[in-house]
Image (cartoon, rainbow, N blue to C red):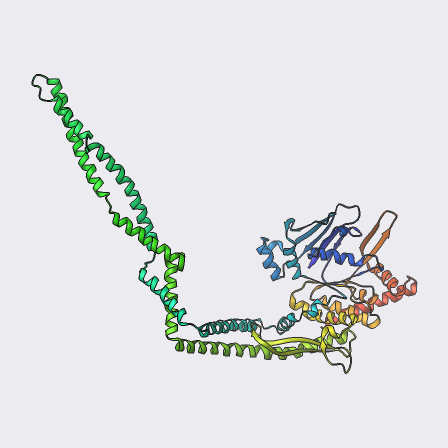
Amino acid sequence: MLKHLVVRNFILIDEVDLDFAEGFSAFTGETGAGKSILIDAIGMLCGQRASAGLVKSGASQALIEGIFDFSHNLRVREVLQDAGLEPEELENVVISRQISAEGKSTMRLNYRVTTVNLVKEILSYVIDIHSQHDTQYLLNRNSFLRLLDQYAADSALNQLVGQRYQIWRQWKEELEEAKSPKTQQDLEFLQFQLDEITQAQLKPKEDEQLEQLEKRIVSREKLFQRVSEALQRLDGEQGLLDSLYETARLTGGFADQNELNEISEAISGHYYALQDLTERLRDFCGSLEFSEEQINQVQSRLFEINRLKRKYGRSVEEILDRQQQLTEQLDRAEHLQEHLALLEKRTQEAWQQFEESAGQLSALRHQKALDLQEEIEGHLHDLMLPHARFVVELTPASRPSSSGLDDVDFLISMNPGEPVRPLVQTASGGELSRLMLGLKTIFTRLAGIETVIFDEIDTGVSGQVATAIGVKMSLLSQDAQVFAVTHLAQVAACADRHYHVTKTQSDQSTQTQIHSLNQQERIAQLALISQGEQSAAALQAAAELLERNRSRAKEARRHR
């Protein structure tokens, strides 16, 4: 519901700051005063295309800001929560749109910049704007089945039909795929693929294990090379051991050279110690040895696995899954008749279950269609269309769907003896507006719409018809907040609140203002609208009209 609206520098409006409540609000004013500008401003919040021409002359930008209560709208709650709003914020959601003098616009949700599309989606669940020439609601034949189902109000049965349709469709598609011709070449190719995978004898995680082994072998190879080089320096030709041995020999054996002999013995000690270390190093080097054959086997196996990955999957597990699929495909090919019989049985069983629930839904639709016809015709008769006949036509669908086995069309006849036809082919502008008002009285609640806006849909009517329209709008306001731009006193007199739109002009500028009327101001405006003057007689007649039509509206609400 729209709780508050601020409009600044928009077309002819300098600034308007309005509070709104539940119920029925009427907007009146002389032709050209700018009554529809307020509706245009709300349309900007709803995502309609913005342009530089919407900014009041001389201003740098226009602002439209609305405060909404979305706390009772589950669909909006889901969208807003996905957008990051907490549930406690939903009672006062601020949506604003700025339009620059260059035609650029910025949309904000609770003062954070957001996309027009997000706000457009949100408000499409909340606000319904209708003008006299707006027939989209009636032209959308695809929505009729959904509207009838909402009226029937058995969501569990609708859901069951949808679920059973999906099950039947899945089995049907599998059956059709199984019946598609398979050439011998196809089967031979499947067998070739299966043989190639089977012969590889893959094991789960084998590729990961081989890659780790390959890394260890490469690491050991580098270590082996360095240790081998160290051994070569110790025990190779002219290595360190030979040098030490020869040094000890050259310095030893002198009977009269005690110090030299001590040195020689020390060198000999180092020689034997180093010889022990060399043996240990040689043993360590032996433990690092690997065969060329081993590394070749690992790399060859990894090459084969990677080749199969490129053909059958990104991992060994996916290749093994493909092997299982190929086995099942070939098994089905070998036992095709048995497999087809099983699929046909399951498909038939699924169809019978779908057909049973779809039949139940169809029976409910036929029953509720009669109730809907009667209820809509009652609203149309209230709107001074006494000969109107409304028909909900249910026909077998050309093909089954998740909605069942029915197609629905809404047909109307406005005159005696006239055959029923699709809505827009029979109704004139004024009749179509009353027809839509009758439909909205029923379907607005079902669709979850919270604010319905009528922009001069009462053009071309007067007298009792105008009163009937006002009473019907008042009745609709029990389910949704209703705004009506009207030029008829009878309609305005049925409203809970009355706003007056005026336009003032000077040499420099033109301004539109909107004022909420009190009881006396309201009677004065009704007198001007209906009588063109504010004489005592006109004021008395306006007061009587207000009292009479408000009483009629309240009575209609009580007897709903």
